[in-house]
Length: 328
Image (cartoon, rainbow, N blue to C red; front, top):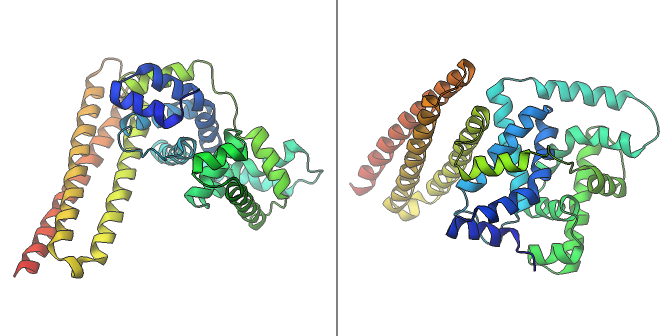
């Protein structure tokens, strides 16, 4: 029996099994590359984004729960990294996508599979983001991995009938998303087009390079891939900490200083992550062969980390002031 994704990830986490991680990469490399390419519209940048996604997976191996749908998680992470990559590179890909989309919608003709894909491809990741995580996972399992409804139901821990309803509901929401943006097609065409066109073959050497980069914690990756990974990890950590702070603020009156301690713990966790990221960036700066452009990007990342660290210290001071008021 072929090991499932989370069993392979646990094997890597517990025993540092490079073979297990390489199997995961080879299993999902085409999906991650396809999502990345649709976002950044540049094959070379898409390869860097793909490497960054698997670097993040290797670093987060201990934090993903056993019920995680890895294909869905990888899709969402590829979107986060792609967005960060576009910001870092200061590219105008979104404007180009909008211009391309407008020109496509202005064309007339029969709804051939090629025309349909040209219409929905630039919008697909945005449409998927509009779904809840459970619906997104169902779409990833059914159309990106090509699983049967029975297999989808087992992965999601629901009945087969529920899995069918979830996929049907998700595809209908995608149809509504496309319709609001001027693309009118049926759910049947959306489903068949996603199944046939959403995942394309990644470059032959990318699986090997992504595996090596992730296992080496970014040391073997390109400078851009490391920057993309570190920047995205920072954004993900901030999002998690902000949610914890919001939840803490909501129950502050009820629990008093206990919430303050929770929030301080979140800040200390982020500070440790910042120190680790800073160490990695400085190691990269000391490596031979770093170009002037890469050096500038790395120095900018270090400056951002320093600024974030200062903000965290200010938050700590504020929290301690709140705690003193609570205890008075």
